[in-house]
Image (cartoon, rainbow, N blue to C red):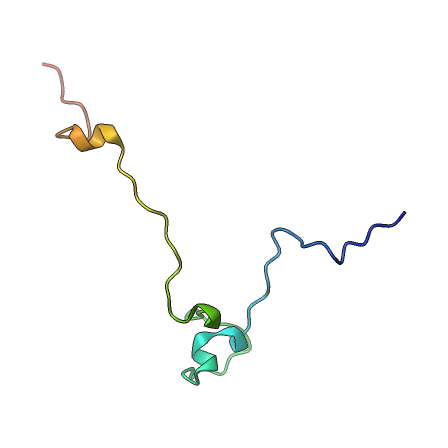
Length: 74
């Protein structure tokens, strides 16, 4: 029996982006004529919203301590 792999999504393989997928290109704001996406590429479906970043969480022992390192004994 042969399995059909064409139906299954391949994890780790993302869609290759192009200039046509860029917010700036779709809104006629791009002045570059490159064959590949540039460093200012922004996905058009997200508009100019930034990617979601991880929240920074302080560790409990650092909040109550006056200094990050223990004081020398002496």
